Image 1: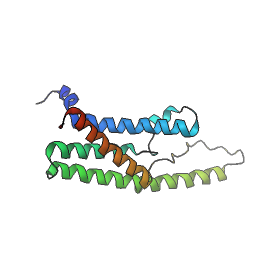
Image 2: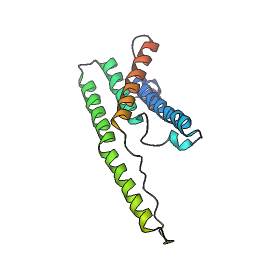
Image 3: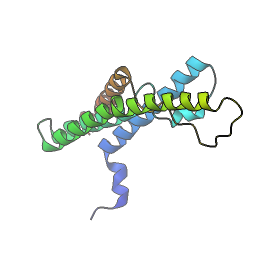
Image 4: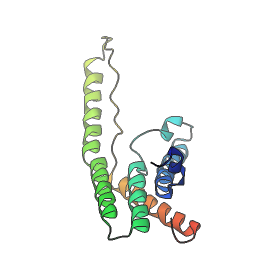
Length: 155
């Protein structure tokens, strides 16, 4: 049985997490430039540009391909996992966000006249546009390729 500390030697995992954190950092920087104010929620939010989910899963799939081989079963699994996550980010989660926006508008309209309503507003920014997912995909692949180059040709 391997030691828990071996996780920190798993370069594929570390690069995938780095791609995710990099995407979240970019969301913060983009929000700072657009809004000209600091909002720490951008570091932890779902949705937005670029997709951190896409960056994570594509860096993972790329890393698996680099280490196990592009024809391996492990790469096939990681690649299909990435496709499902990215499809979900643009499809299901985007639709849920649109529904939340409509429901929030309905609630605002119904309770305009000082009527009490104690429910929390629904989160509207859940999913991603196809462009945000594409940018996350590019970020994930790029992060993994740069990490391989930096390490010297292999993870």
